[in-house]
Image (cartoon, rainbow, N blue to C red):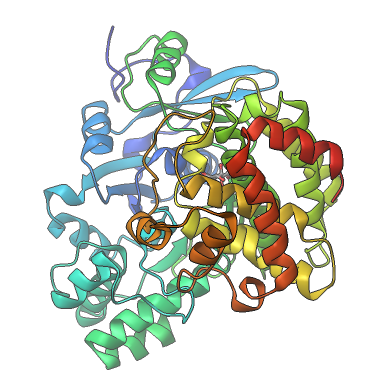
Length: 490
Ligand code: CS2
């Protein structure tokens, strides 16, 4: 079978509706994973087709070479397999022009970021890669990549180090700074990243920090598209649909959303023609998505995984978990401020999206990195429910399920590695803990994780502990049944 490339002639409906090679690079993207390919690369592809411009992407993989090795022999083309209610659709995306890996050194990556052609740096590197100090603000100098880059700022390998070094070189060369667009699931992601970049720069060169604070735009954005990790089945489906071998194909749902603060001093692609919404303040959209979609995702991932349910669609076929998903969505919605969106309809859509039988999204994948995800998804809304005197139980349930996951294999799960950047610390904190109160005390005491007013609230502690005790003693499926029967609404 012919390998996908720029030379292959595809059916019209599948091929890019523009001449990719006629467009130059305008974006460097850090984090060349499935989500970027299904989201920003797809939006950019549609924008190029609609209004053109030099906005193709130089994609950078921060860790392994795999993404680059798959893309380069294909002229960076890849198939996007969209699995919606109306069936499966495939199209070939051509917005990525180059693929680079930090594994080959960062010289070419920095050159691409320093080039005046680069007007935007976008990022999907996952919450843990930044090295943010979530409790105190700014950067965390103890984060491995931050520490290494602070020790050798001229040869950075981490996210903050690369951004600061590239900006320093641009200023020195008289090139206007690029806009930094964070696309990770963090609250006020532009502000968090700005504070971390400025703090990092201040530790290297205070004048540079002042310049960045004054001159660099860090718009916030909310991104959404459920994109499971690609599997051999994804590649086989892409081959069936396009007739070409494609080692870089990704699969995703039909739904996509992108809400962005419109602050791009050097311009931007017309992502709005592809459906992006440009707004003055992204905060309400971020809270909506983080607490409803992602918060519910985390709850169902921990409890579903421990009930032996491999995929989110299996969770949605379980009547008890469906009740608890609805309950969580309702509790999360109650913490939101006024919004121009019908939140009940949003919840109904989420239930349908989670249930999509064509998407195989692993609960174990979503269960990853709990310490990075729970603060904005679960603890923040829980704290709000606490201060407003509303019922905490759905958030306590999600927290207990995470704590159950942190303690390791249970009745219905084989042994697994806890995939969390703080796994070692968690292991140490849990050493010798056997009872639910001990586990609660150890995990809620992890520095900077749970907001102190929440961690020290007696009712919260009691509720989490009571649920956790049952999760430790019984199979998860039994706990879910009891919970759905005794507390179906709150
Ligand atoms: C998920 C998200 O893995 C996770 O933690 O909650 O990746 C989720 O699928 C996306 O945010 C959907 O836009």
